Length: 377
Image (cartoon, rainbow, N blue to C red; front, side):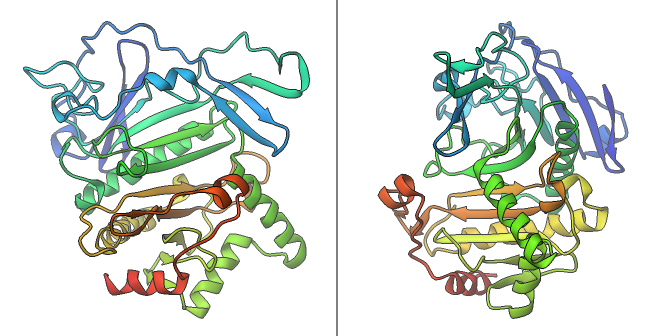
């Protein structure tokens, strides 16, 4: 099935041999105009895709934990000529993407933490004890490949291609939010082995959670209390306060502002938020998406220049979006980007205080983090 996602991106949906969905987002003229087609038949004879994860409720914290042991066999740091996210090309084994080339592509994860199938017979409790509720890990995990070029990265793409990535994020956010059982959609990128990346190809992930993760639950609790006390929207009020005092502003555009949060937890951390209230990426208008394609590149390139002598700073970059149902009005779209690198060659490990107690200690001063981001702009 094909059709334009917007005026300059063509969206083509196909299936892999195990039934998983794959979606091409093309901005190249011959594909946008329909003069060529990306998708080829998947020649692999893969067994039918299945899930199998379960969700267990941690009564001590109120968090849900996904038990997904099948992920322990996922692909781990293959050589470039065996990369499963490269296009399928002559003389090489078929990959996850049955096309000779592509612009941006999204596919269901072969090793998902959550899936639409599997786990139908999961009992309602662990060991029959009411203290330990559990359920099937129903949801969706997708992989988004930013480019077919294995040797590059998102920060080295042109704004036009990043604009296509934004279009894919927005498309998947809208689609997954409409699926029964979705509580929140999270688009994110892990970069660098220090973060735990198992594939070097430039890619990110998109999760449709069947529950609200811990950070969102905490944010909504704080936002509800803020609204009770002030009548305001917490995330909007934080952005406006940062823009007013200007101490930690990194840069401002017509539609977006980047700033370091006053209580930053990480040695490198920056947030990027739209000036207008937007619940999620799907709500951004064309002007906001156009500017974002330039400002996001600017931000990523500053991250790479943050430490002298570090060519590619490891980072996690994630889009926090409003929950799909209840309390949606308390959420507000914003990006959080952070790095575990506290100095060249030195990692901030989450040891006893952070991992054991959730009591964070930052070795960097937020105001100085912002100053460094401005300096390398």
